[in-house]
Amino acid sequence: MKKTKLWMTLSLAVVLVLSACGQNGGDGKNAGSNNDGTKTVGEQVKHEIIGIDPGAGIMKATAAAIEEYGLSDWKLVEGSGAAMTATLAKAIKNEEPIIITGWTPHWMFSKYDLKYLEDPKKTYGEAEEIHTLARKNLKDDQPEAYQFLENFKWTSDEMGEIMTAIQEGKSPEDAAKEWADSHSDRIDEWTKDIQPVSGKDFKLSYVAWDSEIASTHLVKHVLETKLGYKVTALQVEAGPMWTGVANGDVDATVAAWLPLTHADYWDKYKDQLEDLGANMEGVKTGLVVPSYMDISSIEDLKTK
Image 1 (cartoon, rainbow, N blue to C red):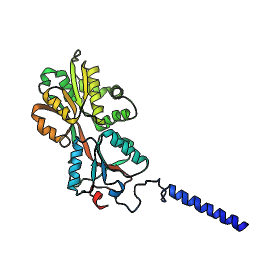
Image 2: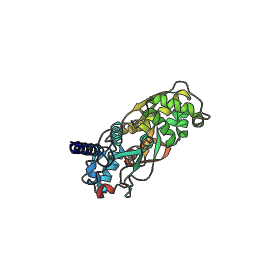
Image 3: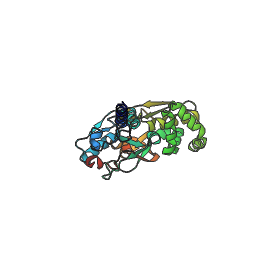
Image 4: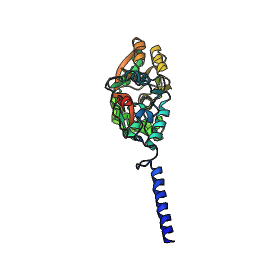
C-alpha cells in the first residue's frame, strides 16, 4: 500500500511539472514567446510587415526596402495607424514577435519599449522634418495667421505630451487646451506682437496620424483662443491635404513630412504653395520591432 501511494504521489508531481512547462512554453515565458529556437524571424511573423494606409509615404518606402533588401517572401500588410497600433499592443501583451512601419514622434515609443531596425542601405533616408505649408497669398490675406504659422516650431517631446494625453482618453481639443494652458510661455513666444482678429475664417487640413492630430488641434486652439480666428480643421488623406493647399481651398497645413514621406506631393505641388519651413526637426521613419526581439537590422529579416 505504501509503495502504491508513493507511486501515485510521484506520478502526480510529474503531471504537474509537465503541465506547468506546457503553460509557460517550457522556457519560463508565456505561450507565444518571440522565438521557439527553430523558426526564422520571417517564419515567426508569417513574413508580414504590419503597415498603415496605402497612400502613406512610409508604405512606399517600405515597399522599396522590401525590394532593396531582397525580401521577396515578405508581404506589406495595408491597414491604418489605429489598426497597426492595436496589433502591436496585442503582440507585446503576449510577448510575440511583430514588425511594423513606425515613425517618430509617436506615443507608442513612450508606452512600449521599441527599437528601429538599422537601415544600412538608407532606404528610409536620413531624419525628416515636418513642415508648415501655406496657400499662395496667405501672407497678404491673413498676415496674423501667417506670422503665427511662421513662428510655430516645437519638439517631438512637446508633441508627445499631447499625443499621450489623447491616447489615454482625452479628446484632441482637451489635450491641446491642457498643453497650451501649461505651456503659456511657448504660446506667448509664437504669438508675440501679433494683433488678434475678429472672427475671420481659417481652414487647416491634416492627415489622421496621431502626430498630426496633436499638432493641428494645438494650432487650431491657438488661432481661436489667442488670435480670434474661426478655424475649421479638415481631416483628409495626404493627397487631398496637399491639393487643398495648392488649390487655395485650404489656408494651411502643419502636417507635411519632408523630404521623403511626402516627396511625390512636393514634386507635384511645390510651385503652387509656400513652404514656411520646418515646425519640427529630427523626425524619423522606418521598421520598428519590440526590444525583446533578437534582431537589429533590416538585413536580419533575410538572414536570421
